[in-house]
Length: 156
Image (cartoon, rainbow, N blue to C red; front, side):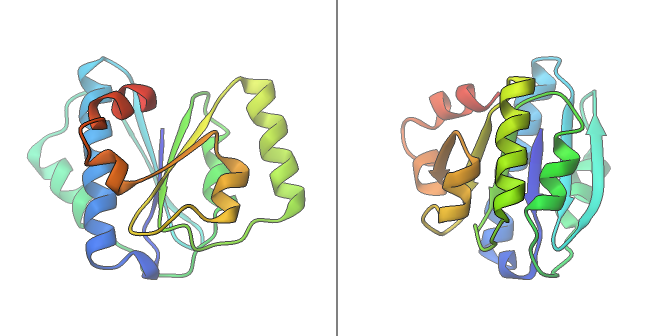
């Protein structure tokens, strides 16, 4: 499952990188016959897309062309993602704070559901809030290195 940040701070190259990673993860998941869930967000959850089979060109284009541009809220998409059962890949530029109450809730849910959160930082270093909620935080620079294949294996 992927939570994809489409807030205003992601406009431009960050958005392109984030969508490229999300589409790569989608392709890998679907090739492995796994369901792929994308929670698209900015200051709220704007859409939840569920894919269970290979996407048509039109579906890929639709996914790649959506952008919201609002503020950023991490709690709302993570709450939605927790309704499903599975690890979460959180793709963002990391510009958002989270409440202590939510931090406690997310950590309880991770233990209870035995899930992990992997965060991918787009054009930024991992923020304090991402480090607090994530089991692993990496940057796009790590994904573009020779170890990218092993990173994707961890995520899927």
